[in-house]
Amino acid sequence: MVGNPANTNALIAQQNAKGLDAGRFTAMTRLDHNRAVTQIAQKLNQPVSAVKKMTIWGNHSASQYPDLFHCEVAGKNAYESVDDHAWVDGTFIPTVAKRGAAIIEARGLSSAASAANAAVDHIRSWHLGTAPGDWVSMAIPSDGSYGVPEGLISSFPCVCKDGKYEIVQGLEIDAYSRGKIDASTAELAEERQAVRDLGLI
Image (cartoon, helix red, strand yellow):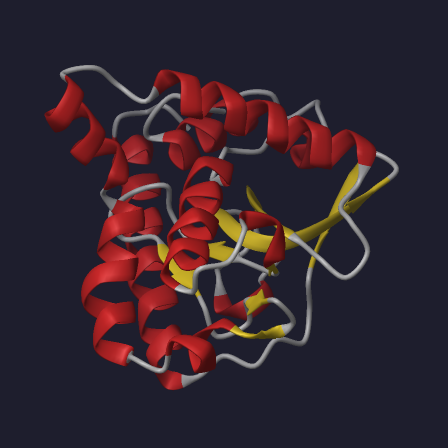
């Protein structure tokens, strides 16, 4: 699902097609992922190819959480390499989360080409697999991992192989990240309740 609100639109589709495998329904946070990769690469003067293990957690909205704590750039921890929490909190995260709106304001047009490219990236990773030692961001039905209620369609770090994806397990979540993930999860829960109230699921 690409159209906004992508996560909840995917949930609506999935809930109205219960005869299908819920795992076939995903929403795209790869555009956010790609934007986050570009931002950190530019910050550290590295090519985007040097960035690994970027994660977008949560909703495809302004509440999303681009996570540098597990990201690596040129083999080093991205958060430690930046060594500037104020930049991470006040510049990096808002820039990634609000990039689409900024592009519309600047150009008067949406970032449709970037979204199309991200959709290709999403399907390529899902179908052909992720690179060894790396992962991608995908909004998928939660299995309860990382405290995200089961059934919500939320973005997680995922590895893909043989046309299937799995959530990367065992990542340590610090208090700052926990707050960000919980805030985006709460927004997703509110959206789910809203579409329930409308009779859409």
